[in-house]
Amino acid sequence: MPPRINRAIEMLSQDQAIYYVGPHSGHVLTYAQGNKDAGTWADYINVGMEHGCFDMTGLAEYMLGLVEGGPTKSGHRSPAVIVEAPVNGIDEAHVRYAAWQFRQILGRGVHGILLCQAETVDAVRTFVEACRYPHHLQGVDPAIPAALDRMRGAPGGTRGGIAKDGRVLLGIGMRGRGSESTASSIWGISQQDYMQRCDPWPLNPEGELLLGVKLESPEGIANCDAICAVPGLGFAEMGPGDLGLSLGYTTLRRDPYPPEMQEARDKVLAACRRNGIAFLEGGTVANIIERLDQGVRVIADHDEESARIGRAHQKRT
Image (tube, rainbow, N blue to C red; front, top):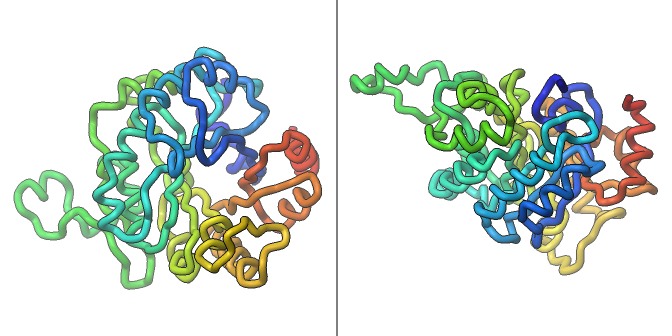
């Protein structure tokens, strides 16, 4: 058996780039499509619900199709699936009110979530908390009292914040009991094992959940250093589509980026590298080696040939 459930985490832990397929909208979520996609050449499948339908019934059928169409060519039960959630990460309130969406998505047995339009530390911290079970305590503010003490009225609350040394401290996880039976059956493990292993990597070295953020507004770019330092994140990207739109470009600009977008891209890449998380960017046959040498480790790639070139460049076995 492979050492991990999540193929994407397995590769990132070896400093290998990962390559994904899947549109940002219009993804066909059926059992038959999942059965077909189980044989993908990619390291994970992106399911776009930011602009595509928020279809939990379809997602459940798709995940079942992936499992029953497997195992994958790498020997995993299914390809990893990361869902772009239709939540704007602009502040804590938006994310807290939308936390039910993360519960629904995770309950279908996916392996990760991408928070779009991330703009503030509090929004991203709340996103991580919403995806965690409350018994996982890595990165949680030690000043928060235990559950029994909270029942007795001990002060301190459940929310995280910023430590005196500037570190972001998480609050107590918000995910509840109830979906572990459906999600664990997709992962092929017991319910108790699922509740232990469905936690963000690399914050939890044994975790199998990959969380990311898309920085796609001037506010998000301005705060990218602090956002990328939030415990629980595994990757981040500069979203060229919406960032370009906010700067007045109605057509997608990339390779080359306009100067101000290139500056934003380099800033996010540097923030990712400083904080030990992966950077996501598109790759092509023409630029994949340059991207890898710059440190890009999550490749938005719809071309198997560029993935073949990139894997050979990194001497993936």
